[in-house]
Image (tube, rainbow, N blue to C red; front, side, top):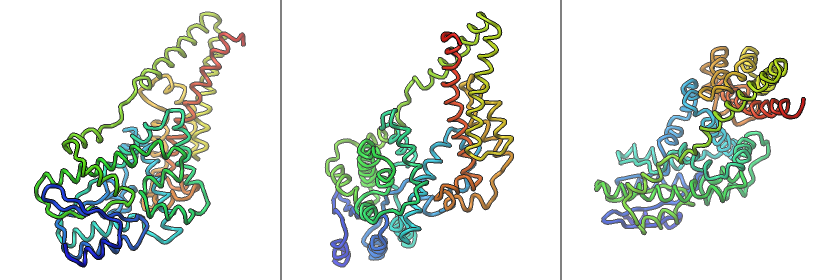
Length: 405
């Protein structure tokens, strides 16, 4: 490595590690620092490296290279595949990062863009070494006890609703840490709980990816551009090299195991509700019809209320009221899927909605103004309303059966 490169590195957080015959320079960057972007550009320009590794996954790289990628979503496919909550969470995370850009005139991730451009300009190998953000978010969600998940999600979206300016202390933390970690820390008190999947697991993952690059035998000098908060962890795991990288990657790429009870519980609830109807009719026909009416009014009413809160089309709201009492008795399809499909048909997003999506979701009212994000709200709020209606309606039914109403 040239003396000028060593002199530049001396001014930045870094670690020099030799793995086999490959020299790896771990450069710790600040995701909101123009100085970090300049350091990346200068190091690559000096020609000491043949491979540039960056703390990005394919999804995050697309977001940097093509900022409008989120606006090219096939909404119907997103909803059908059950990805609507994850897309909404990604938009909320992006909204927080956009707040940084707007308030401080900084481009989060500028150093990653500099690394991508520098590698492409010089024809160097570019390696993405971070785990897919969607998988990281799912594992973080699973790491939080189930009774705290509503608070976590609510806190995440509260960041969008907040009009408070981001404090200078938060910027300093970003300069020393990780964007994803700081984003969660801004919104949720459970940052220690999610430290494993958000930071430590990614340290291990990125160390394994770098080891994998070494094992491939094509790289000789690697510049790894990572957040300063990952330096110590990645270096430690690289030096330990406790298992083959493929084993580490396979384990950390596994989706969190799904509990069996969320699949069984809806069918149990349906059986209990239907059993209540049958029992009610056998006791008294009038009682049976009253129970059915309670179910329709409560379940359909709360689903419709969800549509109203989402400012859905009037036809969508009526659809929610009619569909929820039926879909709640059929766990294979949710009312949110039905209402979102109707909303998409009635208010098909325009090109301008996709173009302004990232900017619109930085403000609370923008979620309702933009047709793309509003479809997600229709899905989420009608689903939540129907879920509440199922439990409240069920309680009402059994109150009539055993409470003498």
